[in-house]
Length: 154
Image (cartoon, rainbow, N blue to C red; front, side, top):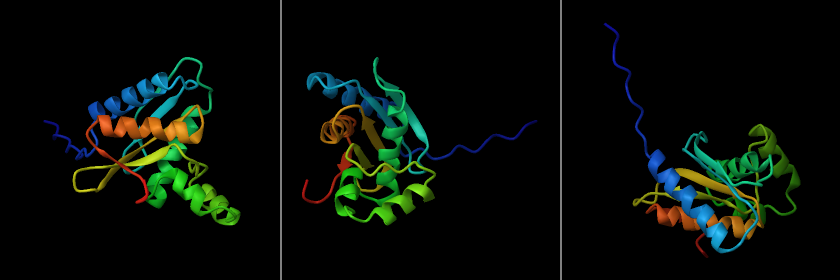
């Protein structure tokens, strides 16, 4: 008789990831943005869910994931990473190389925080301006009942 497989504890369920994506896409439509691609990853950077709108460019999924992974890798939003590291090209290139190119330090990726403000994943969007992408993922995180991991000034 085969042994049961032990389940892995899920801190960011698929159902919540889908809520985040749906709301991020809806926010993009309300703002009449370019077609978006939105990716939600767990704390290991593995994709939980992804959706891309019709007309979204073929690299958008990789860019959206890279924004989310950048947030996880450094522990702040992807836009803050880029802003804090202007002129530090060697650092940014080194991190991009260390992450096998899965590090996109521009706005559009935020951490997903639970009630205790623990990181349980990240979300990234790509398709419009970095600020617009970020606004959409923030709306998605809030719609799922979580807190977006923005810098203290936000």
